[in-house]
Length: 329
Image (cartoon, rainbow, N blue to C red):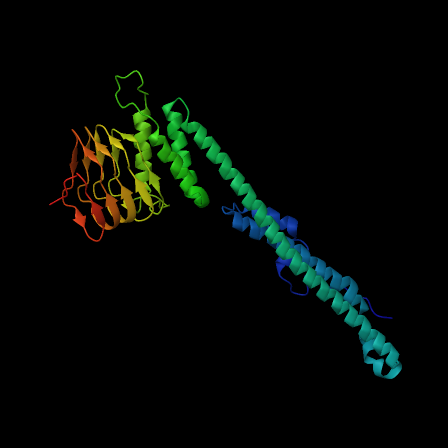
């Protein structure tokens, strides 16, 4: 009779992750108590638990099927003298069958591991997109609120979402730019003046600027597009911004009053339009700006009661079309 041999996992020196006390439940527990920050880490943790369960099942199959079929040591030693060739053949067939079962379990386990990782990753991706959509909806609602403080919270929330959601960063930027294109009354004596609106608009410009300056934001927006077409500006500061890609349009923008700074701006690869812009009452400074590459055009721009300065600018390989604006000497 074949002897029944029980395989002890601890005594065999297997990794502790495969120990009977460290299974999928423990893996989940370690995962949650580890204060994980990235979904990818959670996926790996869950997958580790699944793999541990599968490997346990493989070794259990080996213990209960393969090892049971192994002959007693003494029986193996006496096969050549006390057993017929038929007995030997039956033993070999039994062992071969057990090995085949173990191989089949390993193949099935590998497939299950791959399937589990794929399913878990897809689930997390779906949940992440759902979370982003909810954040977008909440931020957009806040931008339309009556209270200026709530609108400020909305714009910061939308900027943070743009940093986190690379696939739809441009959409978030488009919403911020579209807010600046909303009809705006800059005169505080007008009945249409909206209290706190000037601060909200100035903050949007500042947030955009900080994402266009090296070292001011963890995520750069220098390769994205910005549309300020028809926007009304009575203040703003884009000092030190770098436009190194994408399209930037101030077409038809109205610089009506106050000061707007483009000082030390670097135009290096982007296409920038000031076509049809009106500089009427504002002081707009391009002092120290660098036109290194790409294209910047002022064709069709109108210079009224305002002032536009280009002191100490540098023009390299950029194509600059000045239109009616006096080029720097």
